[in-house]
Length: 206
Image 1 (cartoon, rainbow, N blue to C red):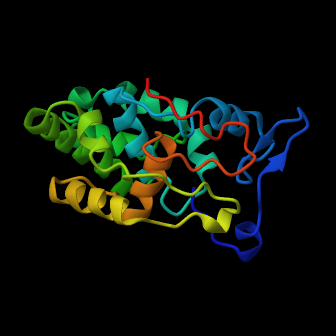
Image 2: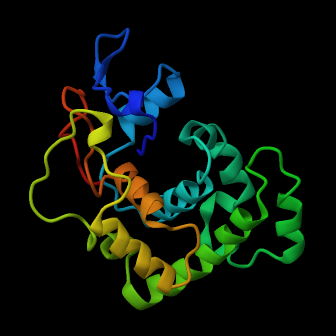
């Protein structure tokens, strides 16, 4: 979860009205709170979920995550539940229709990227097996200091840069090192819950 402003970088975990301490980026919006509490940083091995999240992190480029989170249901409808086999076959006409879908971010390059990523994902699974096993090869080794302030979180790491390079080599789009690091945080490949956050250390695989 990358932040840019100096004020945000100095923020530590925040206590919410329910008495729980949460990461400073987690606003009071119930959707954001639920995402933070039940999903962000939970280690996942469900290939379809991982593919969905990689696409959505790419859709976030230039936007806030809450914008994409609010559109996730619409994205699932528009992109066949992130069934990569179906997405890989989207026709030019169907992709053009998606540009008229107000429920998603109507960016032609991002829509095209979803289809290209589905094709690349299918090739990768054929070559490497489970997507989850491939991704977890890029997990950081050893113990990492838990961030106290948002500014302690890097925009990217050597691991996310390595993942980005390999994904791009395989034909994926919108998978720069910063996007890849946000993805790794979201799906629990790294646990970046801040100090005092009640969810810190709950990294578990499912």
